[in-house]
Amino acid sequence: MGPETLIEAVRTKLGPAVEAVEDSFGDPVILLRADAVRPAFAALREAPFDFAVLLDLTCVDLAAAEGRFELVYHLYSLSRNVRLRLKASVPADAPAVDSLVGLWKNAEWLEREVYDMFGVRFEGHPYLRRLLTYEGFEGHPLRKSYPWRLAQPRIPLKDDA
Amino acid sequence: MDPLFRIQRQARPESMLINMGPSHPAMHGTLRIMLELDAERILNAECEIGYLHRGFEKTCENRTYFNLLVYTDRLNYVSPLINNLGYAMTMEKMLGLAVPERAQLIRVLMSELSRIADHLTCLGAMAMENGAFTVFLYMMKAREFLWDVVEFTTGARMTTSYIRIGGVRADLHPGWREALAAAVAETRRVLKDVSGLLDRNSIFIGRTRGVGAISREDALSYGWTGPCLRSAGVPYDVRKAHPYLVYDRLAFEVPVGENGDNYDRYIVRMREMEQSLRLLEQVAARLPDAAPLGDGPEIEPAEAIRRSRGERATERIRLSPNLEGYEKERLPGLVATDRPVAVPAKEDAYTTMEGLIGHFLFFMNGKGIRPPKGDVYFSVEGGNGEVGFYIVSDGTDRPYRLHLRAPCFHIVSALDELIKGRLVADIIPTFGSMNMIAGELDR
Image (cartoon, rainbow over all chains, first blue to last red; front, side, top):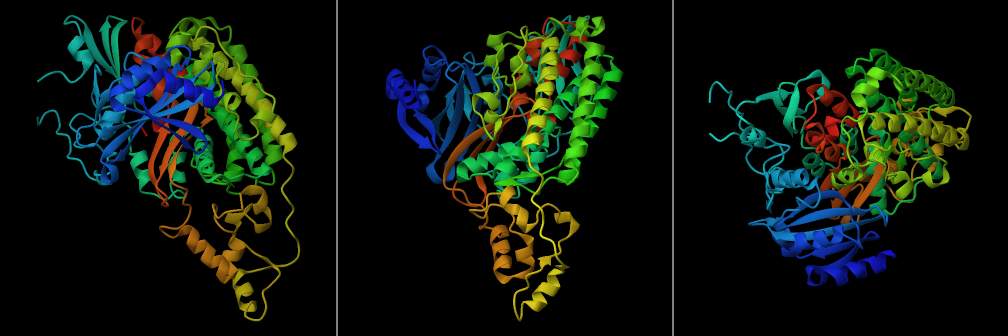
């Protein structure tokens, strides 16, 4: 199955969940509807697509220009040796999407990182808390509205609290 | 107040909660493992990361594409050249650049040197933490020879910034062949010695075989790549699956393990180093000596400017010794020259008006490297696994978003699962064989 037929097959399988298919520097990109993320990924994980690896998950802040955050998923299929990029847009004022915890085990940490950095809520995540920054950190540092080099308040010593 | 951590909420009242790290000699920098213990047995574990978070991705959004290269050195600081490579090749994919053959071979050479250094560091530290201090010293000695080759050429051991967008910074040091031959011979000897010390050592086997074992399915589900995934029996290697540079023309094998335990991770790394040594020899045989520089008298740049009031000087321009290897004659073999993606030749910048304008246009804010709009993902095989960069460009000279796919982020996310139900002493070899590098884990 070549890349074009694979994309066609994915399109047929996922039906209305696929909003569009784009090409980005030679790589196919599938735009998903945000409310269909979880069933779409569950289908992609199984045969015949067999995307057994969630390579990466990250987010892009397009709030200023387009009023949305874009979640970017990278999948890898070992049996086909194909990487696939999928994107889903969530509104910037209340960003939320279904969690993929339960489908891939690294989704727990990946989603925690995106929550920490962008404030995107993952519905159904069992343990959604900050990962790289600490409890009590104010704001989400990778949002464009978060100024570079903003100083955070010091954490009080245990004895002072 | 509610307890902060899941492990605190779930802990049984009679068991003991204890921190391992973030400041612990075996935690390789900064990782905190919270343990719920019943005597020596681990009932539950939770890892907390982020102690070395320094906002790499945010910083990159505020730096030009050329300037942010230095931050990539500080990701996996044991094999910085591979991070440089991953970033440079992602940019090349976006810019559609063709890199000269010589630069590609030099990049393979540097990648494999870094890979061996990475594996040596991981296994040396792992062996030391298990009590085999000799192995640590042997491996550090071999690493010094490898880093000699790197240092002669790049001028640095760790913060190299040597592999640049479009090629490499400078040609190899004139004495690289001898240094490389010495490093390869020394590393071979060390690998043989270490094999003799550890492969059938009952203490080492007792602490590693069957400990920290992960199944093939779990390793894939956790997004493992690199030697750790291969130890579980999956022969996935970016160099074979999505060949880049000249790897498809070089002969090497991808060693795999069977059980996915600590011992297999050790064996896979040992065998991979042998394959990397093979690659180094093949590259050395294919790589011709540097192009000879023209002879004749050299003049200072000031002298050339003075004379150019009459007629442009034809003599060679004397450069600072810091620029050795970046002479104008050598550039066509080192960087893509069809577009201004690398620092322009200093001979021109120092002596001609056009050259100086070219130099300014490369470094000025808003000018310089400006890739087309769009997003791109590209990955290379790092010491730990797939090092991927995801870059979103909005057409300016700074990335709109830059994200690193750090291989050990995914590997460490499985740590608490692997140590549950084991003894406290099993944490050390399990964590050691994962090769956590906080620089890329926390970014």
